[in-house]
Length: 308
Image (cartoon, helix red, strand yellow):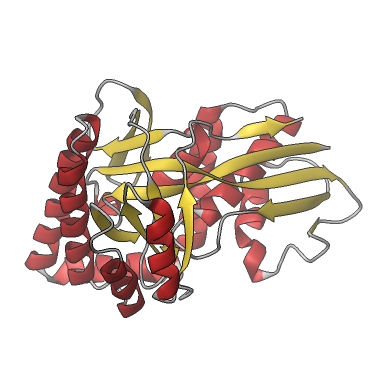
């Protein structure tokens, strides 16, 4: 029997644009998914069929790397589902970590590569930022070319992403879950279709990439006010690309006066927003009053790990 866990993530800047090769910045957070795996007479997850739709990431992870017999699996999660916090990536990475360890092949590069392929199979279009963040932990910068701190590169068709370790200062963040569930795949496809026909949309995607690099520099320089302003700009551009939601805007408006800035995080269409603040408890109360489910998250330096 093997148990492996992996963290959820927050994208601070660059979601959706990263699919087009633009930079993006993410961090791992202290919410995790654990997957326990042991041999069995038949495949099952949490006592249920592997063919159930909610286990499609687990099923595809098995198909990607497993060369053995049937398995009984137990998946437990503290990461909210469809809330922009990388729940699918954390499930995928924790499952792959357990399976590869059972085969004597546990290493971060193999896990990240396989994780990206699994998300592509399930979603149809994806970037490697979620699965790399869940694998490595800490801060992750995705760029078009290599720089200092390069972890690995991943590619799909003509696109290539370079994934970097990106140390950031400790940040005080509050996430607000709208309770509106939205799947990543259709939202990513919607932006892709818009970009194919609209030069304005393509320019907005490029601007998100520029904001990402400015935001990274601001955070590393300790200029939290500028980082917050850039988060606000990033959110407006994501709304223009059609991945916003009135429930997100309501929660973001509730943060005014208590946050440096706020934006949707993840695929959008509902899901969650994130605010940068010095007053997390009070801000969490505001989000709750506005109808959201708040939780204060902390930066996690740990990525995928085996549990004793």
